[in-house]
Image 1 (tube, rainbow, N blue to C red):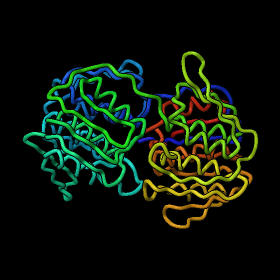
Image 2: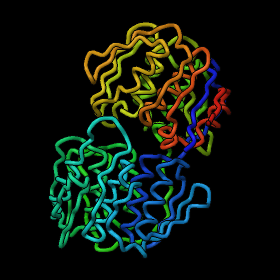
Image 3: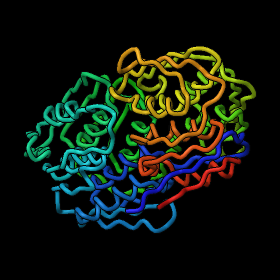
Image 4: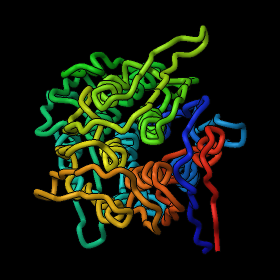
Length: 427
């Protein structure tokens, strides 16, 4: 296996226009949701990322016919799907494969699934997923020795389900199963993220009845059969935020197209608080955000929260940005444990970061980071290190970029088009 890394010659001001790809977090939920139809679904605006390719391979292993040769479009024909056992290494290596639990249970009333991985940012348990499936009438068994979850039901029946914690994954997974359950399901204390709404819209396009996505309560009236449809994935909120932060970190002036500005309000607010200008516009075809930064950022405080709060997936990139702030910033991670694995890498670049505990960091700004050899430990840590390398003086080599490939489409070419010096190297 060839090892690849990014070589970044930092200190280049990002300028120009970049177009955002389809949302990773929506794509990896909508692709498995398509098997609920038992017909053909055509998904458009999918990002060219490793997680999408992995899901194609997983579906093909289950007997689904997948055509993914036409740009950002994937045709999924699940009429041939007969196998409800998803136990391959591809399943266990990707976190989002757990959406097959709700999709296969909803359509076939049985599923055997390898417990997924795909990241190293805390336990991220699936207890709320299991609670929801049991409430719908499924018998769920965890085989910890084999690392498998099994679920089976004679029939699924709607229920009132209150999630003990706000969980995007559990909200979507139970929504998938409930869309084909008998009667009405009411989900309370649900996640409100844009990709939750996107999945609900996709289910409705297939003939489901899902109301309230984006609010505190989602009501789902189950249908015995869903049908195929065409659907375009929303723009990626996290890619948008990453480019917004990168623009500010490099004292840049970047127009970011194909965005939904309301999804970015918490990020825009924090960047403006730090001294950046964020301008919302409409060119007649697309909405865009323009980020302009002309000075060293002011220190700010960040607390990650469920949407519409500041996204946990952008906590790591904005920490890299704040390493060169004028003052001391406090960052409090409330969503996931162990999401500060990037701190030691930023310290290699000269960052002054102290840890109060496993979820709280203080960042004392320095004039500039300096280039170093650094190693990504997960997808968003990789994004953080890319931001750091772009802003730093000298050359930065970012290793373990297979994590970055999981979630960012054509990252180096997009950055280079903005004036960055980024090369993918291999040995």
